[in-house]
Structures are given as C-alpha cells and as structure tokens.
Amino acid sequence: MNIDNMKLDLIDKKLLSYVYHHFREPYTKIAKKCNISRDQVEYRIKKYNSSGLVKGYLTMFNYKSLGYNQLGFIFLKLKSPEMKEEVMLEIRKVSTIITIGSIMPSYDLFTTIVSKNNEDFNEVFYDLIDRIKTKINSQEYFIITSTHLYPLKIFGVKEKSTYSLISESKEVSLSNKEVSILKALEKGSNSKIIDLARESKISSELAIYIIKKLKSSNILLGSRIQFNMSKLGYSFTVIRINVDNLNKETQSRMIYFAKEHKNIDSITFGISEFNCIIQILHQNQEELTKTIRDIYSQFGKNIKKSDLLLVGEDEVIRTLPPIMKIK
Image 1: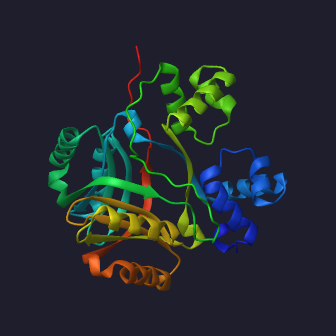
Image 2 (image 1 turned 120 degrees about the vertical axis):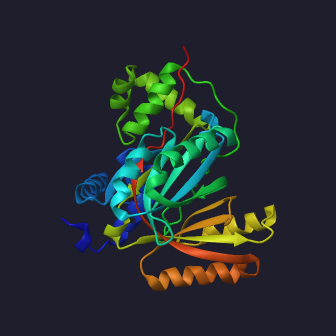
Image 3 (image 1 turned 90 degrees about the vertical axis):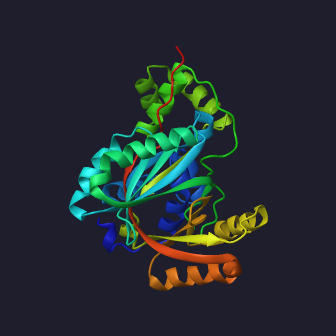
C-alpha cells in the first residue's frame, strides 16, 4: 500500500511515535506500550518499511565519549546546481562528516562535521573549502555548543526520549570488540542481536553484555528512525536566530519551550552570526507560521534578527565517526 495515499489512524500515530526511538525493542514490548497485538505491530512496521516511509534506522552516539568534542554545521552556496553531485562527492571523502543534505534559499547544501577540537575542525574545514572553492560562491560554519533532539511530537504522543549528542562526558577507552559492536550497530542499527554478534564475530551473550555496557557508559544514546517525512505530508524548516544576551537562563527557557512545542524537532545553540537554530516540522504553511509566532511571542524581545531555511531530506547519514581500536 502506498502510504502517500494512506490516512494514518490513531494506532499508526501512536506506533510511529513510539518506534521513532524504540524500534530495537521486542515486538511484544512495543505492543504492550501501544496497547495493540504483537501481530499488529509486526504487520504495520513491515508496511512502513515496504512503503518507503522508513528511510533508515540510526544509532545515536555520544561524540564526546568517542573523543570528538566539537560538532559543527557547514553551509555551502554553489555556483551552479549542476555542481551539486561533484561537491557532494568531495564532501563524502571527509571521514568525520556525518550528514549531508539540501537546504535553501540562502544555501544549497549543509553538512555536519565532528572534530576533536577547534584546530581539528579548522584543518578539515579549510581543506574541504580549498578542494571545492571553484564550485562554491560562499560558505559559512556554525560551531555547536549544545544540541537537543526531541521525540516525534506531531501526533500528540508524549515521549520523554531526548538526545544531546555532545553531552558532558569523558572520552572512553574501547576494546576491539566494543568498536566492532559500534560499527555493526551503525551499519545495521535495526539488526537482531544474533546478526550483530555474527557481524562482530562474537557470541550473542557477549554482544548483549557489550551493548548494555556501552549504554551504561553513555556511549550509546539510543536509536532513531529516519522517516521520509514527505510521505507523511510534513516538511522541515529551520529558523536561525540571533539571540541577544544568550545566557544560561535564556537557553534553559528556550530548551524547555522547544521540548514542549509539538512542531519543534530540535534546538541547537552555537557560535556564528546566528547563535540558535530551531528545526520545525510542519504539515503546512499555517503550522509553520504559528510556530514562528509562538517563538516570537516567547522570545521576541531577545531576537535581534532571524531567517528561514527550507531543509530537504538528508542525503547522507553516517552517525559513527572514525574511532580507534585498542591494539
């Protein structure tokens, strides 16, 4: 069945909201949480996969635990749309770049990069810009100081799972087997334990133990489904804000506001001309306008300027940067 022409019922909405962060749980547990049968869970999830609604399954990692203390966005304006594939090819060569996507109208592409420190970021950033300088008109970077990813709230289901990808933590030393599990989880984050164990060449019992250890060490933050939101009739828009006097109290209020607002998917603070980025998930122009009004109603006196960017579907996602094995 083509989900483009399918009207989601209340069960679909509840199930989609729950599995957004909990797809690795057994169908029996998902069924209990969503108050439906196990067979219904299996049938509907298969339907979401076959329809193209589910684009991928992502494992979320705490980058500071892996030795990457800095996260940043790079925005690129191309000289010509025809150069997009060439530029993306060059971007893909950078091993510490974890996402690439389309964005407009001020830019054409955005990418997310992890780095160990400022010096590492500068080296990678300027090397990339040097390689694509003949194909771009301008570039801008945004150094992230904190970022918060929220549950799928558009269907009105309250779910408390949130992620901060650079939460405070110390770098953790990893064994070869732990690194193998991390890589297997990124490659097949919806894989069964037996498949992860086979990929890592260890027993299922050891795989379960390592995964529990990685979670308790705050290295594995959880999971997230990458939905094709256009199939649900939703779009992403980013509002970039220059917030005057962005102190801890203002940040706390904005984080709480973003967490509670049903159309806000994430909020990010950082160092750039705009020091706050809010991602809005909306079904139509009316929802987008209302969300922007809500933001200005709460924080208008602190906003010096803002602009809107329309975000396309992510075209490349690899959530795990290079990590060292212990010899």
